[in-house]
Image 1 (tube, rainbow, N blue to C red):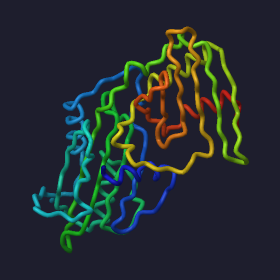
Image 2 (image 1 turned 180 degrees about the vertical axis):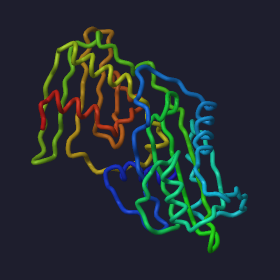
Image 3 (image 1 turned 30 degrees about the horizontal axis):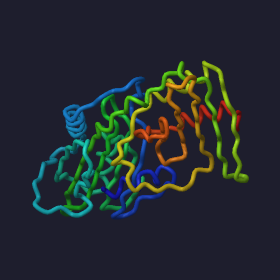
Image 4 (image 1 turned 90 degrees about the vertical axis):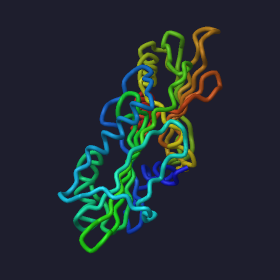
Length: 288
C-alpha cells in the first residue's frame, strides 16, 4: 500500500509545513458536485481521465521528456497496489531551479495548488474525491529534484480509481423507513450523547437523497489510515417501516468517510470529508 495515502487523511486534520524531502499532502473535494444515483465507471474512463490530466501540464519552454533508468526515490511513482486504479505519468527535464519549476507547475492545471514549502527535493500529493462521474477518486503526485545547476527533474503522476461500485443494498428508499434516530457523541466539554428521533417524511427523504448521491471511497485510499478521535461524531439509524425493509445505520465517526451498514452488513464507505452529513445532523439536533 502506498504509504502516503495513509497519511493523507491525517493531513486533512493535522496541517503541517512542507520541508526538504518531505511529502505534504492535501485533500479536497472534486470540481463537480456528486450526482444522485449509482454511476458505474470503467478502466477505460479512468485511463482516459488520467491521460487528460497529464496532457494539461503547464511546462516552461525547453522542457523535454526523459527516460532515465534510475530515478531518485522521491521522484518515483508510488502506485496503489490495489485493483481498480488506472495511472499515467510524465518524467521530464525542465529548465530552471526546482522551487521555481514547482511553483510554475503547481499553480496550473491539473494541480492548481499553492506552493506551501520552500525547500526541495519535495513531493506533493493531493487526493480529490469523485472528480467526475464514474471516477471515485484521483491522486495527483508532483515531485521535483535538482538535475543540474540549471535544470530540474520533474515527476508528474495521476492515479484514478473507478472501483468500488456502490452495492445494490446501499440506495435508500425513503418510503421504506418510518423514522430516523440521530445520535451525537461529543467529547467536549465532557463525554456525552444527544439523541433525537424524527418521523417526518421530509426529513427522512432529505437525508436519504443526500446519502444516495454520495460517491464511494476506494478501499485502497483508506488502508492503514489512522486519525485522532473526532470531537463530535454522528450516527443515523433508519427504522424500517415493515419486515421486508432494511435496517440502515450511517456513521460520521471514521476518518474521511461516512460508514454505512445495511442489516448489519458493512457496505462500501462513502466520501465524507466535506462534512455535509454532519452539518445536516447538527442542524436537526439544534447543536451550535
